[in-house]
Image 1: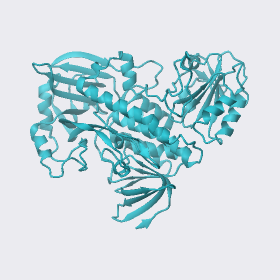
Image 2 (image 1 turned 90 degrees about the vertical axis):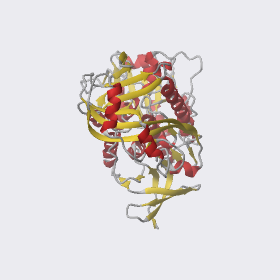
Image 3 (image 1 turned 90 degrees about the horizontal axis):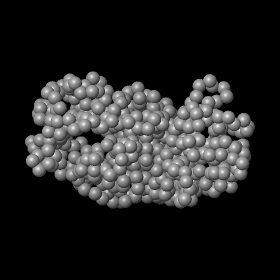
Image 4 (image 1 turned 45 degrees about the horizontal axis):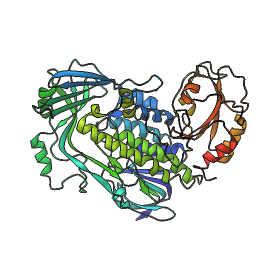
Length: 548
């Protein structure tokens, strides 16, 4: 067995979650290796929905333009019941949200992430599989089988399993994966149709029997290309029987019936039969690129890691694809974990940082699993919230960490709705002293780690220069400071780069009043709100994260 040079983080699995984690670690200067048992990227349009919150994170990572160039807009959904149009859902978000909903085949998302990772000099080690690991107080020893058929032992500070629903890392940690499976089996197909329906809209066509229950279903999600859709529908009995007859049982042999199955793949004729029954208008499917039968389970780990080993994405949570929540939730797992690992590798993390991954993400996974199971059984109309809240939740813009041990809570009676743990919202109209054009706040946050935003000059607070000096000193230079001035304020933030809030959007959305400071984490969430902004309060807030 070959023993290789140690690395900071070993990542098992090079899907969207593992790739996001690797890119974020490399952006932070952390060495990592990422391995995947597959010899090449799978050309399957599996997870296809990109939520607005994921696009915000891709913006911060500096790769959103490549994603937008490849994706198509997801404008809404057309619903039909027994051949009759039942209405149209428009996926319209508040104007201040910078991105809408998008659709992109999973292999294209992986391509963009892999190319970004390559710019940091790191490549996926393909046809290489993690087969065992052991951790101790100082690190993790991982045993790999390589593309040449040999074995390799790698020592790392941390190990992260992004290795899917049948995760070896999860099993090796002895984590429970409670839940169950849906009895239904479905077909997936990537096809083209020439109907007259408006582009950019998903199609949900159902048949209800005499008892009112749905007994047939067709769901179509638009993909890049003319008339191209990823379609899903119940599998016919003959395909179900063929798969069940396979001696190996569910993929992975671990009883987790989730994901693509082996056996006979659906043919174009199988897809056409469903279209003949349920398509809103007569149409012929063509250009079958890929098809499969799949199963759905709903499961959640009891915890997102133990010691120096963690799980993310499908290794931690699986659920129905309703609302395209799965891949997006996993990508956000990766963004949440990456900055914590970077601080730990750099020796700057306080004792609550790594446990904070489970504290923050486990409740999110629990909510997503519960909501998607409910929506799969009853439809999104069963959600009691208003339409705007429903869309914001589906867009994952309401994910937050107000109860996290890593944020500094406000008093319960504090009037402002924007609190530590909330997503840091975007705003426009920020003008500088040199550039003649206004920019967005997200432009200032892009490709940065922790940042302190200081608004105005609070009469009871410390100066922006004093706050900036303290922020840098307390974090070992890891935190930068940026000032935001009211449009009519004099230049009073000497030594601190700043922009003017020319349209007042920052003051309104952040409730900044006469002056405040905000600590924004690398994953784009607020960890503290200081009003008035004082150095002592900043030190207390940073002490929850950094080893001060």
